[in-house]
Image (tube, rainbow, N blue to C red; front, side, top):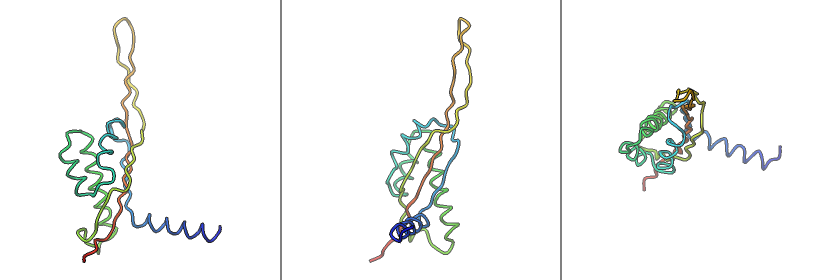
Length: 135
């Protein structure tokens, strides 16, 4: 491995150490509905994102709010000596992927059957943590 490639790999590794990543698997909401909520908070500060999620009428916003609070708590566990108020949290990345599907059938008239697909999703949330500079 060349020195330039090694340096950039070490730089990426350091950035990953500073960021906080949490994942929610098999959430029983369709990915399309979850992406509507994820698009609302992508790139926002955590305080603004929590306000948006708290007052959103979507059912998926409750799940994303819990995930966001979980990300902050996991950062606190990792950095016990640090205070949350001294850092600025920003949503760096939020990704919604489709998960497994539960396939069910519903009987219809004339001896027909309709298929019901109960969709799930996986949500990946990455927080960027920057110290607040007091001037």
